[in-house]
Image 1 (cartoon, rainbow, N blue to C red):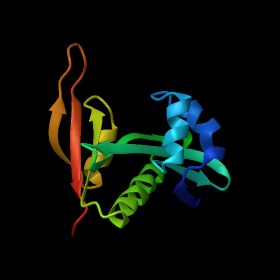
Image 2: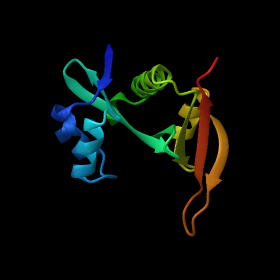
Image 3: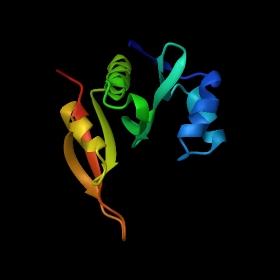
Image 4: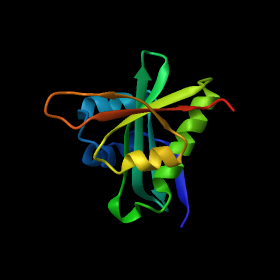
Length: 138
């Protein structure tokens, strides 16, 4: 099973609207037009996506990573992150950031991929949001 990672296009919007409810349809379409969403496919079937923005307008920040449940733990998330990191290196960035709620399993994936804890956001009545960073320079 070979996964293909590419920059998302307008044709991906129905899938993205279905799986990423953290942004409005209008914002999702804008992010796709900016090239800030990647799609993962097996064959012609969408199996995952990754969305990012810019922290402090200069550091790429992965906001959303999602894989179809049937394809989790099969390398799709790893492939999405690797493709995103390569794109950030090509764009001249030397560091990337992401975050995850302390109760989520994603933190283990990020640490396995070389991300290290660099802070936390503590909001009332919410679990800690872990901030992780990764150096992309050697």
